[in-house]
Amino acid sequence: MIKAGIIGATGYAGAELVRILNGHKEVEIVWYGSRSYVDQNYADVYRNMFQIVDAKCMDDNMEALADQVDVIFTATPQGFCASMMNDAILSKAKIIDLSADYRIKDVAVYEKWYGIKHESPQYIEEAVYGLSEVNREMIKHARLLANPGCYTTCSILTAYPLAKEGVIDMSTLIIDAKSGTSGAGRGAKLPNLYCEVNENIKAYGVASHRHTPEIEEQLGIAAGEPVTLNFTPHLIPMNRGILATEYATLKKQVTYEEVKAIYDQYYQKETFVRVLEKGVFPETKWVEGSNYVDINFQIDPRTNRIIMMGAIDNLVKGAAGQAVQNMNLMFGFSENEGLNMVPMFP
Ligand SMILES: NC(=O)C1=CN([C@@H]2O[C@H](COP(=O)(O)OP(=O)(O)OC[C@H]3O[C@@H](n4cnc5c(N)ncnc54)[C@H](OP(=O)(O)O)[C@@H]3O)[C@@H](O)[C@H]2O)C=CC1
Ligand SMILES: CC(=O)N[C@@H](CCC(=O)OP(=O)(O)O)C(=O)O
Image (cartoon, rainbow, N blue to C red; front, top):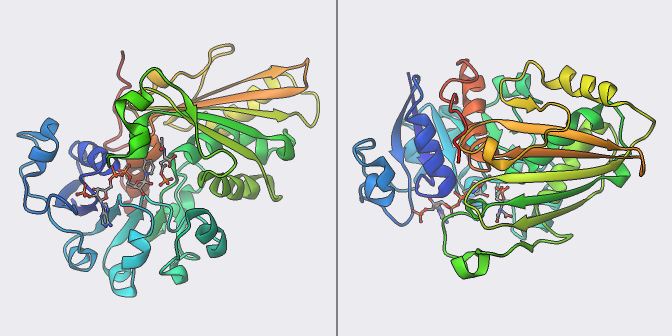
């Protein structure tokens, strides 16, 4: 049994960590970190945890927390984890950061896209990018884990096998993605009010969304060449879920069976990646509440393009679920421990 602390346990990603870790055989949560609810009952913040979590919210003192736990999850805004990190913390506990602080290797790129100064760039090199299916071996030995973003997890896993195998022309890749509003967190923001979101679909971050360089970096590593792409996110009126639709020109003529064989080569043995049957395309409802990524593709011979699609639950595989999957790898637990939630429907 290990001890875990969550800083940002009162946010949407943190609350999902609490929900998942409550069903984990090997973990006891000993610290429910918060900024606004210190000393209040956690179950008063999230009533779904009534009679399940009997603990008060603690503060966000990462130094003190590191003395008490084996693993710290930081489900906090960009910049928090980087501002707290030091050698002492890293020597005492493993860190799984759900923010973007250690995802991007070039600090200048991080500072440009996030508009903040990175306060501990000396740890970026050591951090392991926690896309579980891709970096499994490195994750096992990590002490500082950069958990990927929600759009990025969905976008990268959907295109990864074809980028890696050189099937698509990476300079033509366009990613069009839609997310439910929980992706924006629990904090009150005008664009996320009910009247602004309900019965409405809107693009945002057009040609400027901060997940763009993260996707470019990771697909660039896969393709073995620099990648520049268009990524356009949309906010849609639902709580959870991301659907990414990705378009790219094929480098050579390929059949459905050849492409399917490539996806199977990468994902057939993966517990959480489901490549769907021919002609069946991912829907967010079929993964909701679970750690699954559903993927499929369609070749369009008329345009010589391939259309790839992926769906995840942004709070699970896009955040807390993948963070727990990575924790399982880092501590040598069974990779799916605590993550056997069946998708909910409707
Ligand atoms: N929502 C999602 O789908 C995903 C989120 N992420 C990332 O996870 C992190 C958390 O996101 P999310 O849960 O959505 O955000 P929320 O706004 O819902 O929660 C933020 C959490 O951080 C705490 N907090 C706020 N400001 C500070 C601060 N200055 N210092 C310390 N703690 C602070 C809040 O405490 P309190 O409520 O007590 O004030 C709250 O617990 C972010 O980095 C986000 O980018 C990553 C992937 C997906
Ligand atoms: C709907 C919505 O607002 N989504 C968030 C993505 C949240 C996320 O993945 O956070 P990271 O910044 O840690 O990657 C956004 O577009 O900023």
